[in-house]
Length: 227
Image (cartoon, rainbow, N blue to C red; front, side, top):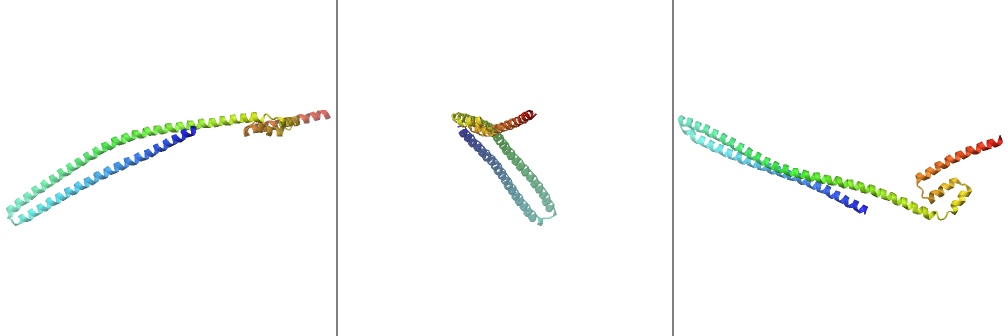
């Protein structure tokens, strides 16, 4: 059951990661497409305005060429009218460019406001999903720790059952105790009691200390007898 819950949580985490990547790519694609569209619209408008200005300039040149055959007074008048037309063209061009820039800025601001709202919503969704992911990881860690403790408890109980089964036949253990073979006794006890390596090492250390103490006592007893 714990493994099934772990698999379920892992699948949920993978799905959340896939949704993060998909939303991030969608946001970047939408922003890129909107900026490309605005740039193309701005370029098209600028081209149209340049064509209109070119046509007006050509018309003015034609009018000037037609008026060159007039006398000096008409020439002065034509020059004056040309200057007026030029001023009008400049004013028209400035008005058109200012209106175009204003419209372009308004479009950019409107799109930026929309994208900022969408990015804010996406950021909130991302924060929520991140929080869910963190909670899922914490749950996985807790379940893993519980699983480890349960396995240790199962191994301990299994050792206890094995000890009960093996302790029914103690004839071999009785013979070892009667012969006082301490080194072999540790191996038998480790098998009967299902001792771990750490517990067996403790028995060996205890046996080594006892043997050393017994030898020292024996040597002192022999010296006392010889004396």
